[in-house]
Structure formats: structure tokens, C-alpha cells
Length: 52
Image (tube, rainbow, N blue to C red; front, side):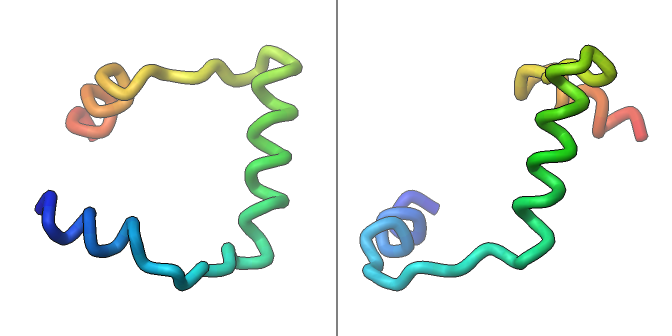
């Protein structure tokens, strides 16, 4: 896994994000700022996903 990551992280090719991605990030940011949504740390997020 480390060799794969090392290979991918040193590649000079940039991948463009899909056009909808920026809009989704902005919507999420607005929900966080307004208090509708709170960020989870990674451990809490994993626990939540495993319960689904």
C-alpha cells in the first residue's frame, strides 16, 4: 500500500475535480457555518459509517 501511495503521490499528472464538487463543498461549508452541521473527527466518522 505504501509503495502504491508513493507512486501515486509523486506522479506529475493532476486530476480535475468534477464540476459539481465545488458546489457540494460550498453547501457543506455553509451548513457548518450556520450550525446546521458539525464536522466529525475521522474516528467518529468511521464509527458512524460502520453502524449503517
